[in-house]
Image (tube, rainbow, N blue to C red; front, side, top):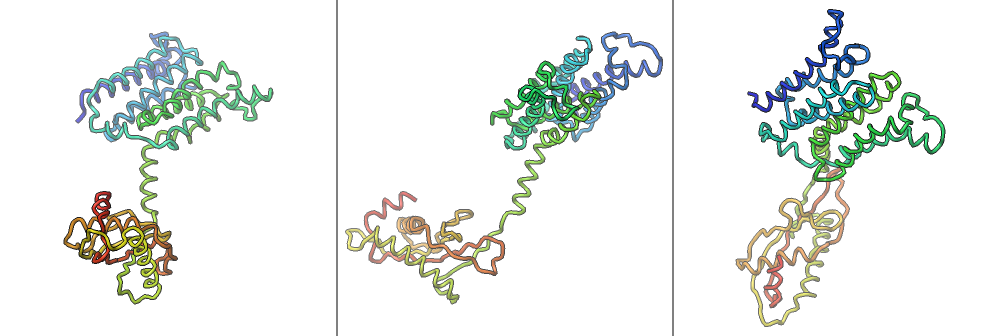
Length: 381
């Protein structure tokens, strides 16, 4: 069921659609001029078809409940605002005619700012977006728009792509650069790099591409912006798909458990190397003969990666069997952690492409060696 603010947005887009389509419809079917003289420029189907179809497309999209989202309404608003500015600046449409598009855009934005219809979407719409899916495409569009003028300015020759030579004049290019430059700068700030902002930039770029398509001089130039528009508009889904793809292709971890009684010669040799490393750390930091001694033994499991570093994902170093003394258990965990990094190893052939982690089960016995520092050591865990 639609909320009042959603109904308001749907009413705005369809009211705009009817207003901009009436001049063409009345002129085509009745051969008479439209009573609203400011919209005469929209009655020519050849020059206005792209604009009219863009407005109609947003109305249809927002009529589908699945797509009636905050992001799409924000995109429609930015698209109407951009198209209104472009028609006013370049197409010679009267201020009153452009005002229809600008008014609709501002009305949609006002409804979003003051409405509570999309509370469930706020977390998603304001979620952070990665730079490569938003900021970089926006700056690419700015570079596309600025390149013809820079080419002409620096070389003194016409731009090699004839369909973009109209942008060699800075007077022509400046409004377009201003629109996309605004979005590029806005998306450069992490706090503003959201799905809504990316949708707004995409909608403005789509309006620019549609505007180019309507002008034979810029027809092919408009096609250059469509891939960039696709990235900006689908930034949310692209980012989600990339995360899923990364998780899917992430290297699996194969754990090999190495107890003290292992019969595998290679694993036994590695167990001995780890044992010597721990004993060396204990001997250098806890010499015997101190005043205070803690009696007991604790069993810990130490997951070690191929490079000898401790594998911290999951539970990391774990106390397998307690000594019955909490202070001693904490000291055992701290000693196991501080003894690293351990010697590296070459993974077994049976591991394949997975990452091999060797889990060493080690007994830390404290019959003769613990000293007063153990209390300090345990407090550091």
